[in-house]
Length: 88
Image (cartoon, rainbow, N blue to C red; front, side, top):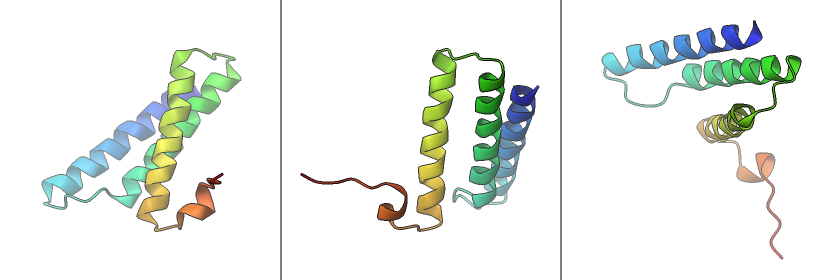
């Protein structure tokens, strides 16, 4: 059930992005990224609830991380706040 809701939210997010694109706004919309994160989060939660840890589950986690990094970049959060890399 959570997975289905997540997919619906992802589809709505893509429709929002498409509508803005049709209006001539070519930038990646913050609304899209947030809705996409919520949708992927629900897909992950649904898989965890059903104990369905297959390849798709791990790809969803990677997609969630990538979408989070896009959100952080969109909000201009300094890299050190969300991704700490220590140089040796």
